[in-house]
Length: 130
Image (cartoon, rainbow, N blue to C red):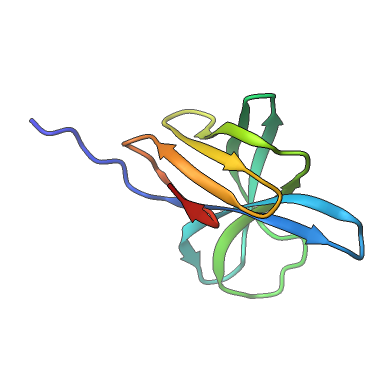
């Protein structure tokens, strides 16, 4: 019997980010569903925890937007995390269920994915891959 391959549900994009007007530098983490919704662009609710060697993104669910303007597209979560340098494990999980783990190297100008779990439900997109 063959093990069932995890189905991709989300895309996590990690890229260097600078907002010169607000004086913010860091890395943008943008998690989006691969499913597009027809009525609203929902928001993904995520708890974020940053430690010395790991970043944890725990998906809590989705929520309707504050403003109910009809619009289609994926559900999205965005956050900027500052002061990331060197290698860290990025773990994306749901409150119950599987975890997707990736090793990412952070520099001020790029992010490099180095490894990932085999049965990931999240695909990761960075500026470079090793």
